[in-house]
Image 1 (cartoon, one colour):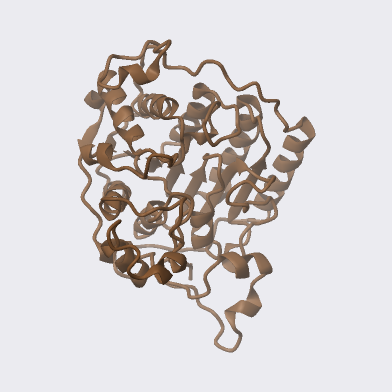
Image 2 (cartoon, rainbow, N blue to C red):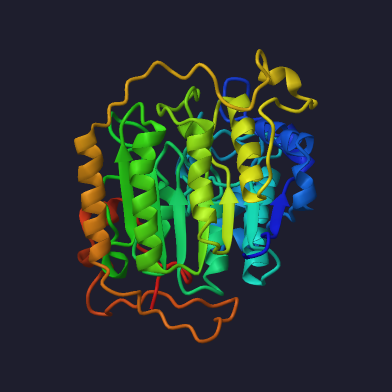
Amino acid sequence: MAGKQRVSYFYDSDFESFYFGQNHPMKPHRLAMTHHLVLGYGLQKNLDVFRPKKAYPAELAQFHSADYVEFLSRVNPDNQLVEPSLLGKFNINDDCPIFDGMFDFCQLYAGASMEGAHRLNHGMCDTAINWSGGLHHAKKNQASGFCYVNDLVLAILELLKYHARVLYIDIDVHHGDGVEEAFYLSDRVMTVSYHKYGDFFFPGTGALHDVGELNGKYYAINVPLKDGTTDDTFHALFQPIMRKVVETFQPGAIVMQCGADSLANDRLGCFNLSLKGHGEAVRFMKDFRLPMLVTGGGGYTKSNVARCWAYETSILTDSSVSEMLPHSEYHEYFAPNYSLNLTGHKSMDNMNTRADVERIKREVMEHLRQLTHTPSVQMHQAPPDSQIPRYQFDEDEPLEEKLGQYARDHVLLDPQPGLFSH
């Protein structure tokens, strides 16, 4: 039997102090609550705990545009109205406000994901955990959906330096649009997102028929779900699809975004997953024993977010935890029952029918069957850290004319090194 996996874990006490604003649903304080449960359960004994290094602006610019990174680095609540036109340009609004320490926050959570990827690349761990990361909506040159810097794209770019193929999985209630868009034309990254779709639910993308284009055709997988998704519905799709994805795509590494807003009772969510159902997705992927970066993401009922990510830390470290939560500095937040598992699920009907589930599974499996062989990326040695091949387009035909309407609307048409395959 294989030995216990080595797990690197990233946390900084500064996360306790970042504050989006009184009425904003994103509360970085949930990270402190998670960390204190991890400590209360004694899980740190099975972790290599690191304080993340802040990502340099130049590192963020490996994906994000230089002018956007420069804006983030210098804007603050006192000067944000000096150039109001930039607020619109970079999509700064009530969802993505300017707050004290915003760039420090971005540098820390992005730095943790990139450092986790670096440790995986060099065999310094088998699994890396960054609950502060997973901000999957951020675009190359815009903030979106509470996300400013896309740490997931940056981590995947890091992994691509040493792995021919990287698998990205997203179980947040919202579609992982920023990551999908970044790699929509690539066959080196397969993105798989399970999310609520329809009824004008943010971000409005992630239809079943959006599968990638050009070299990336069939390398984007979307599993659109309806209100009230239960554990049984979710895993009737998740497990067979992920088993087939790993068999077909043969990834060298995995990045998994574990947004906790897919849990029952989330302030902004509409699914009915239990803690065990959410955690089972993590356990299922862990059992493939591939290098894996695990991040947080959405989650807006703080006490349930902390429960979820502490529990999933126990799964990733093969540790047992008690149903009664350990005492911590934030114990009162878990009243009245102070138990690990969620109670009082939303009384929400599951709107996914058995026919829906079978249709989605059938269509996704058909998309995967289009990939008749493993992608033809040959990597006998790792490319230099500073260079990953860019997509090669025909000189005589504009890229816009090669793409469908979805890609024209959502994928930036100025390919950057590292985002596309040979």
